[in-house]
Image (cartoon, rainbow, N blue to C red):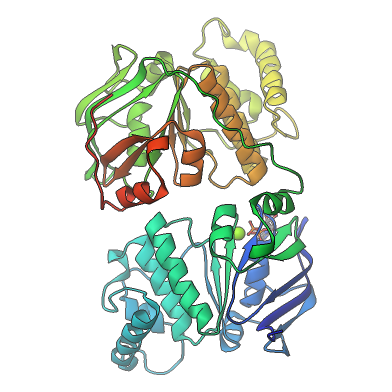
Amino acid sequence: MTAALVTMTQITKKFPGVTANDRVDFQALPGEIHALLGENGAGKSTLMNILTGLYRPDGGEIHIRGRRVRLNSPREAMEAGVGMVHQHFRLVHPFSVAENVILGSRREGFWLRRKAAEQKIAGLSRSYGLEVDPRAKVWQLSVGEQQRVEIIKMLYRGADILILDEPTAVLTPQEVKDLFATLRRMAEGGKAVIFITHKLQEVMEYADRITVLRGGRTVATVKKGETGIRELARLMVGRDLAADQARTPVNPGPPILRLEGVSAVNDKGLPALVEVTLSVREGEILGIAGVAGNGQRELAEVVTGLRPTTAGKVFIGDADITNRSPRRMIEAGVGHIPEDRMGTGLVPNLGAVDNTMLKAYRDRSACPGWLLNQKDLRERTRQLVGGFEVKTAGLDTPVKLMSGGNLQRLLLAREISADPRLIVAVYPIRGLDVGATEVVHRLLLTQREKGKGVLLISEDLEEIFKLADRVAVLYEGRVMGVLPVEATGVEEVGLMMAGAKRIEVAAG
Ligand SMILES: Nc1ncnc2c1ncn2[C@@H]1O[C@H](COP(=O)(O)OP(=O)(O)O)[C@@H](O)[C@H]1O
Ligand SMILES: [Mg+2]
């Protein structure tokens, strides 16, 4: 057997009130791509932050190349050959690529080394297929390019234990392929590549071995060839996931939402939506795919009355509701699961009852003089909280103390109970674990079966292909095509997301 590059034994790390890592064992070999898989909160980032010297463990040992190490700082970890690309990049935007790469790598003359650095970077980017201009300023780069800079930064410092925390969250499918091609080359060069993820598909496609964490503990380390998606899901969640909730056939009705040639500008006054034409029918989920920042937010805001259009028309059923107020949109039957749960969605310091009331006060029958009806409202909230399995310490406990999954359940409960005709769901599973994701998906599918229309904005193609009847792709504010999911695939949608392919479609 190959000698391990890294061995972490019985690692324990406690934070106030939570044991993030509980006697975790983990080992990475040279030449492998190793996935660290687990739900949100399983302890993945903590374990890797220990390996990069950011956190000190409360217990356990780390061996690198067979030697016991104590990593007291990121610098010491770097010197031991450990590099990490964090979920949120740590680049200095006004600086160039080369400047970012040499920043903090050694103490000697910064500016003198820039020329040499540029050459070395060009070399690294050639040998690993990491295309990026060393002289470009970081603010000019796309997210994918910024990630490449972070990878080059690790390589430049001579890391041979490379850690990437949820690296694909921000990438298009093509960029994901390119990234793993690069990681494969690094592994072939004898490095150990560790990537953190909660996406099963990705693990099965790209990893050699997989270590599953659950609730801060190592559940198993398995070889890809000796496992499958179902087993991994079970290891990760600790139980069998419900049989895949395949979409039951629903005959879609007439369009409930129509956008005709809608344009809008973003907060900076720049075009965000350009002549967008699309529709959502009753009993249909229309998925909006695209890399975040291509007009999705503005689209949701236009449909919920939070952003004016500069051209075009918006219809709910037959009613022209272009540029009507959010309140008018709600009356027209639009429910909204916003991107920003805490803020647009819920008021952090209020409890579940008051947050439920935020929308209910418009409902005259429930609230003629709502002060009198506090009792009804409490009862209604109690039913919602029970019916949607929202876990809360109390109906008046500030919702900011609830977990992401419970917040999302409360939001869905409130929106669905208002019986909307159309639900606009924006990144509804972002930050949720597998269990909570399943609940949210079930709720959306049920709404579809009840004949509601759902506009689902998602960055996760797996989610879109699972839930949506049709998929529309947004790129730079334009619709690149609208296709039935049966008639397309990840490949094609990926090309459209990158702006490399456009399919003319008839409206409707
Ligand atoms: N700096 C911190 N302070 C307090 N608690 C933390 C900190 N970092 C992580 N945690 C907690 O430790 C647990 C594991 O978190 P994390 O390692 O980020 O999980 P994962 O990366 O698998 O989603 C969670 O309950 C999280 O809230
Ligand atoms: Mg994490």
